[in-house]
Structure formats: C-alpha cells, structure tokens
Length: 289
Image (cartoon, rainbow, N blue to C red; front, side, top):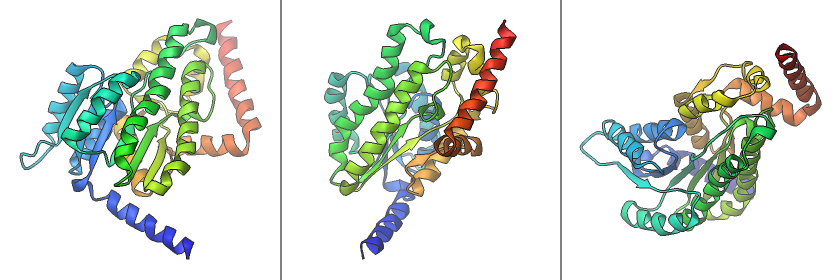
C-alpha cells in the first residue's frame, strides 16, 4: 500500500509540474547564464518568474527580454536586486517579494561564481567569495523561502556542477563549494519530502556562459587538458535538461551523456577514473616543461 501511495504521489507531481500557468519560479542568479536560460524556459511555458541577482541593470535588461516572450499582455516577470550571500538582505527582502509575487512553487538557486587556478594562486578572498555565494547563498535563499513553500509543496533546484561530484585540477575552491551544494541537497531532500517539497541538484558540465569566459582567463593548462575532452554545452541545453529532470521528479539532473558517464564511472570505478585524469594532467605538465 505505501508503494501504491508513492506511485500516486509521483504521478500527481509529474502532472502538476507540467502545469506552468499556475506556477511561480524564483531564480537566483537569474540575470545571466543558466539562470536566465531557465527563466526563458519557464516564461515560454507560461510561468510567472521572479529574477534575483545583485546587478540591477542586468536584471532590468533580462526582465525586458523575458517580457517580450510573454503573451496576452500579462506581466509575468519581476526582479529583486539582492545579494543572496547576505542573510540580512535575504531576510528583509525575500518575504516582501513573497507578499508581492506570491510564494515560490519552484526555487532555483543558480547564483554562483567560479575561479580556476592552481591552489597556491587562489586568493583567500576568492575562496571565501565562492563559498559565500555558491554554498551559503543557496542555504540563505532556502532558509528564507522554504517556510513559504511548506503549505503548498513545490520544487527546489540547487545548481552544482560536474566538478561538484568529481574533484578537478584547478578547481579546489570551486569544487569545495559545489560538493557542498550536493551534500546540502542530499540531506535536504529527505527532510523536506514530508512537506511535499522536492529537492533536485543540477550538475552541468562546462557551459558557454560569461562565467566560463572568466574562468578560462586563469585556468591552468592541466585543467584545460581535462576540459578539452568534451565541448562546452549551451545554457539553453542545460535549462531544457533541468526542466525535463524536474518533470520526471529526478534528484540528480546531469545534462549530457558524457556527464552521466563520468558520474557513474566515478561512483563505480573511482580508481580508473583517477588514473585517466592523472594521465591527462601529466601530459599537460610535460608540454609545459
């Protein structure tokens, strides 16, 4: 009987997730990159979207673009200029946003920054920024918004990365923050299930975004050798994969076949995966000498 109930709940969840006309999606880091691409997908499906980011000019530009995708003259997009790593700002502004726009049915934590370099060349301040925005920022938005979701259920999507499940040369700080996002999501998944809140974690590979352009400026040769195995994907492809994963009720959403293969290989055969990575790193280092 419990299994039958779970199947029924899953079917209801999948059905309700496709009815976007009744949904409100809050997206942190929604002014660019994957966050903005997800906003486009939600708006196209008729959902109301709340974009949250620090830079107001970028938010307004993103809002204007998204409004052009809406139909019927409805205003489906609103913006909130907010630093999610600042818990005081989050506690002050997000409840006010709920009063104006309604509680989120979907919360996407996409706010994030990345910096790639050799461990000894990563400034302490960069490490702290990545932990504060990528991990603590995710915690902060959930802390404030999750209570508003308890009476209605919904979905929380936390964006990690492929380097959130496989530690990668040149990404000691970024990997630390994104491994943390997966750990937070796994623990939270069990805690929020009884409230009808689904938790998912999105782990995209290298994605063609402004963030990747910045990463490549300081990325070590060894890291470039590892990332050259596959081409960067597009933020649009990542957003669509996220939507499909949400509609299927998946916890771990990994866009692309190569990412899925790496995830499974790392879990089932970690030693061969490490050996292959070491070979690529050593080749790159020989080329440097």
